[in-house]
Amino acid sequence: MNHATDHAPAEIGGSYRMGFTVGEHSAGHMRRILRLFLDRWEMPWLANAAELALTELVANVVRHVPGRGCGVLILRWPEGLRVEVSDDSPEQPRPCEGDDVLAEGGRGLLLVEAITDRWGTEPRAVGKTVWFECDDLPRPLRRREAVRGATRR
Image (cartoon, rainbow, N blue to C red; front, side, top):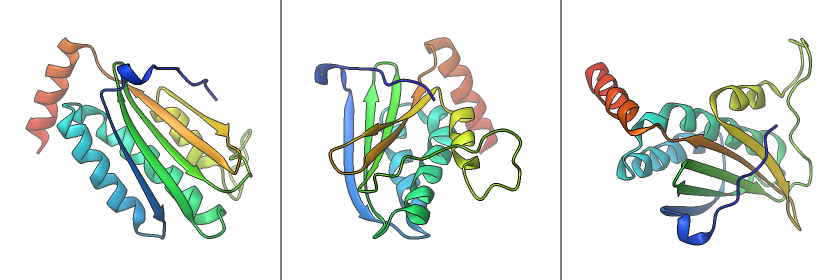
């Protein structure tokens, strides 16, 4: 697990906060919202990793949080993107450890760790926040990724 980065409010380039009671199909709606913001912020190359990580965090709420209530915060920072999923459950998420391929859960967090630059948890007065960050690409790589993405469509 990685550690959070601190940014002053003036450095935040945009944000979107939403609250949901989630179900099995909620992640699809949240992915579309996230993609709209990434397109607006001209960072579409982050969409695949960010959408998959968001799906995993929302799936954890559906599976493990009584009442299935959560809040989602999407932040655009100078370095890229931060997404936070908060809920009222005090239970901290735990990735599966070792080679336990028969573990009941935890593989989604290993996926989040593999596809994002940082992730972690922060306890709150009630519940917790699980977050991830995806770094933006340097400008020359942005153009290459945008061209590659455009030719795939």
